Amino acid sequence: MFVFQPLTLKLTRPYQWAHGSHWIKYGVIVAVVKDKSQPPIGWGEIALPPDVTISPEAIVRELKTLTYGLEPFAPDFIDRLDERQPNPRYRNGLVGAVLTAKAMEENIPLADFLAGKPGFQTVKVNGFLETLPPQEAVDRVSYLVETGIEVVKLKCSRDVQADLERVAAVAEAFPTLKLRLDPNGVWDECDCVAIFKQLQKFPIEYIEEPIPIRQNLSRLRELRQIIPIAADHWGNTKADLEDIIRSQAVDRLVLKSQVCGGPDRTHALANAAFESGLDCTVTASLETLVGITVALHCAASLPNNDCAHGLHLWDYIQPNVFESPKVKNGRISLPENPGLGFVPSMRNGG
Figure 1 (tube, rainbow, N blue to C red):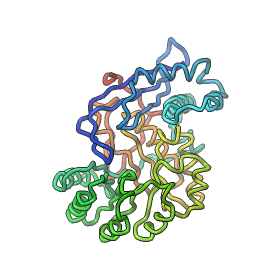
Figure 2 (cartoon, rainbow, N blue to C red; figure 1 turned 30 degrees about the horizontal axis):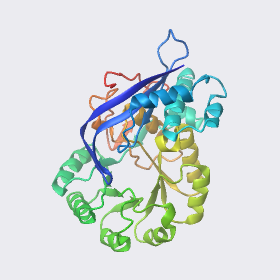
Figure 3 (tube, rainbow, N blue to C red; figure 1 turned 180 degrees about the vertical axis):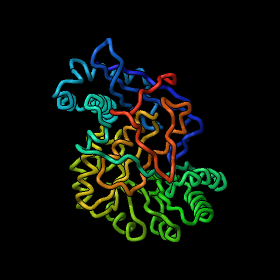
Figure 4 (spheres, helix red, strand yellow; figure 1 turned 90 degrees about the vertical axis):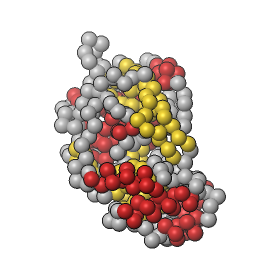
């Protein structure tokens, strides 16, 4: 059976991005138990986008309706769930809980269960920076660099001049650092060619969704000749992936388990992308260490271990549901135990 824990958590600092500034994180932790007399053995998380404020209690009511009559340990559970066409974030939490439970029963990490073979023990991570003023940005990056991080993702905004100043300050202070920029599609009314040419002098690995991807394929084909482009919120189904490959408009996929609809789909899409010559970055949403660790297992299950993945978000929620990972040489290790790797503490539940 499923057990649902609604979450309303105050963040340690505001999450600032192109669509606003947010202090509260809403979501639901999903646990799965095989016997009512036993503790949970599988865990997943449903994390809402930062700008969505649906009541977690309302989500729990929807989840109970969605899963009515379904047995999580039945062999056909996922097929029967998919027949009900769940919201991808709901599916992520439910399927994540079931798959971590199955991995626990097999006494292997979720990464190994997804890959069908031993996955990687450590994963390289990029740092994360909100839309901060230049000096604050440099101070935050200084802390990240001390942990061995070599790649930092900078959120961008509609204020392109402020974005350029932030990028310039970070690049000047840390000339060997690789940068990833993420405007979340809000540069669509800008002269992107001019912006990209101004950014070309900086060590930018890629720009993630500078403008809405699907509607601007010809513009993106032009822009990626200046700086590589990554697609976010497109490529979350096999049909999308085929369209991306045909379009030749992007260089990389950014995959979130919350958006793809679960670790199983994330793993399958990433492998298909790799086979087609597209690199992938696995990122977490704004979520607790349950969701972040599911994403970590997805990254560890991939065939390539050279990419820095976007998982360094746990410090927004402190104390978290488990001890925060230690970044060493720019990498974090998978938990040593099977399944998810740890038993979450629910003391932060709202």
